[in-house]
Length: 178
Image (cartoon, rainbow, N blue to C red; front, side, top):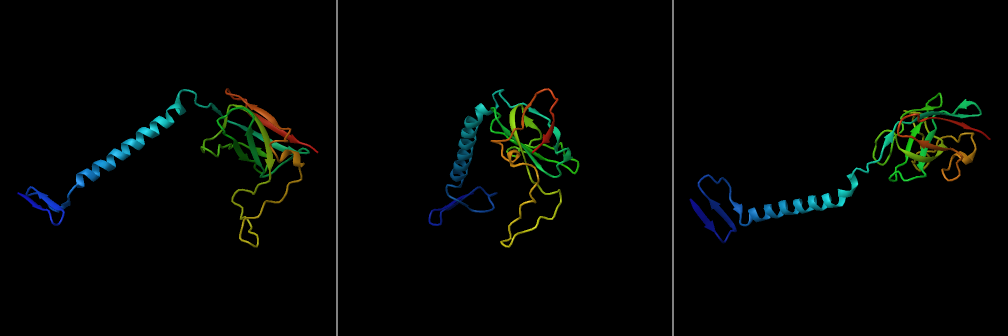
């Protein structure tokens, strides 16, 4: 059974057709599929160089931070690249004993640090699962200021510089002093 009604813009083809479809429905669907294919091809071209075997090598990093021989508790330890690491910095947080082990790259969420040279800064942080107080505007307050010198808070002036190696041995002991 073929029935066409040009006035309504619908067509029925065959007796098994249950609903009228707009004329040109198949063209619209093909247009969407064509657009999706174009987007995928362009995406493939744009990312072709990203996985050409030059993938960044990532290594595990851990260590301890102390100030005047005492552990620096719940501080943020930030590794800022000095060499080409694909723009990847890494960070972690010390525990109550000043140890850090869970270093993460915020850009990708991957654990570890890209092999290369880094400037390291140590900034204040809140203990895990701490209830962070809010200021009068409802914004989170900064953690209490640590007693270590400011030179360790900025990567540009930090005397802490390390090299993350591809084959382990990436345990760093940072002794902050006056």
